[in-house]
Image (cartoon, rainbow, N blue to C red; front, side, top):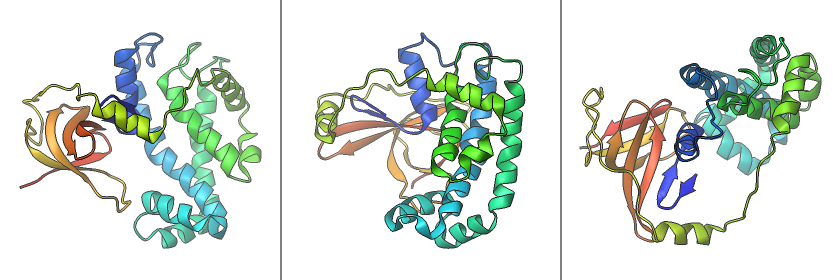
Length: 256
């Protein structure tokens, strides 16, 4: 997500910033915000891993080559072709694991509540919904697989009815122009309890925990706390760019 000269990476940072700017309606309508962040590490981690392996493994050789190389490397590791074969061979096991997780969610909804935490939607509904949507639409056996879970299918409809709001198209050129006319909003911040001792001005490399072979982002620390790290990059075309990463799920290496 880009806002001016700030780039927010990963849904964790996106949700936090949207909540800060637009607290009503809230992504955290109950007193369970901490629980939702804990659950999001499950939905965005092990459960998402299962969903991706189910879909990619079931598709096998039918996957477009460019897509397989890009997404396969990100989600199945640097030796993605072997990972794809392993996922295909393990489809019954993967489906069994995903079925258990869906059963838990189905039980949570069994009192006829509209959403996972009650009658009002929350961030965790979106974090689970995108995987159910993925399985239903991208795995040939998805609809039959999901038909076991009547409460989830009812909940799916409730989430779908929320809609996507009003969107306005923006070209990449417009986004660059916006960034060029702005400065990053984050001010320097030091967390004295940070286990890595991160301080503003320190050179770091930030990368995902996933073994996707992607290049880390090398930049200068602006602010860091237990939830996020913001780094400053100088782009020759745009100028200063603030890039925000979560701490959970991302590795920060201090450069010499």
